[in-house]
Length: 244
Image (cartoon, rainbow, N blue to C red; front, side, top):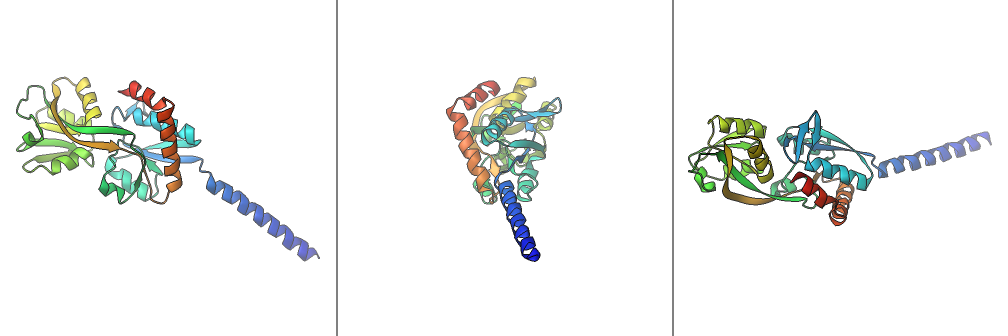
């Protein structure tokens, strides 16, 4: 009889533990978010904290979903490998949802549309469009869309950088002839640096989206629902006005 009671008690405890375990698995309380804080005004460091449009948007999404987030700042070209290795749970970093990247990860709905632009010295007059980059030394950020765009243009000497501000410094010092970068960060650099300008040329359009691993469809679903809610209740528009 005692043995029977013990077996019943063990079974009850086992069922209770399984139930508790399942509850924990269903509700994720913390999400690690990868970014690259070299992309103002989307994400950049200010007094040691990562701030910007993407960060405010991510904070708003986290409140909608009901999760805690922790930002992980790393090199842009290391974000996708980190996501695939499960070192982070998602990415928000002004990342373009290209067909090539879609093979490795899933992307959320688009949250921002941008285009590539050319930054030159203020006095430069010989680069009117992207074809004008031929024969020039052009700075791009490693892994960014500009890197891909410029690599398709024959006759361009490309210099790759890990950070935009380094490319801008080289441009100002005459070490390179131009920098190809996303429109909003380019505006930010021109605003804060004398002697450079954005040409009238516009490159291919791109769409920013958040990346999630292929096996995390539940998180992706929650992000998309939250994004739709934020666009519907005016929060998204308020963030646009704040940062742009």
